[in-house]
Image (cartoon, rainbow, N blue to C red; front, side, top):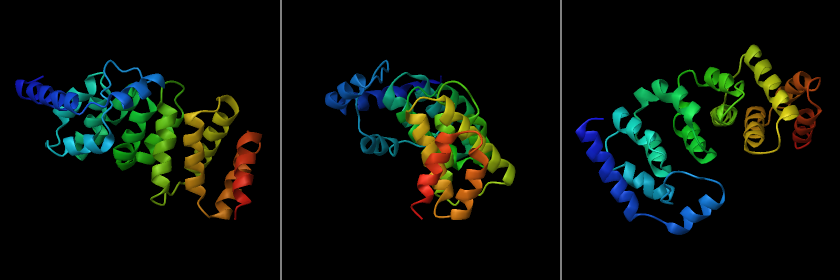
Length: 216
């Protein structure tokens, strides 16, 4: 790490200490968010702080390496778009908690040039928060009128069906539900097409889509 980056990260951490919110920090720790340090700084304040610095891959990389909640989030806010593709896989592999994954998916992953292909790859990974990041990325893409090829749609449906049959209820299943509902939107034909793919594999996800269809 260069002296300049070291001094900048030191200055950022000093600002974080001054903005510390002990109540938020204690609440997050009680929910199992066991970072080395958690200052409990709210997102709006972190974005204000990020706006004081020029986006830089070396700075973002240095911040990400610290097991500090706010440094992970600032890394996401300070990574330049030209570096998104370089860092995406590494950060998805290392993301520690869903809060970090939420901001990673919203700010970086859904903006990748090959975001759909990447998301489907992550949805197929068995460990870590890969699946969570993958489905959340697809959910964000769905808000931008995500278009899947027939092969991608088949892959998406079958991976989600497997998840519904094997995983316990929790954040990953919820992110998959968001992706499914976002992708279907108000397209009844798309819902019926997906139902035909998933029904032989998972009664759980089939029931979910049928209930969604009843809203049309």
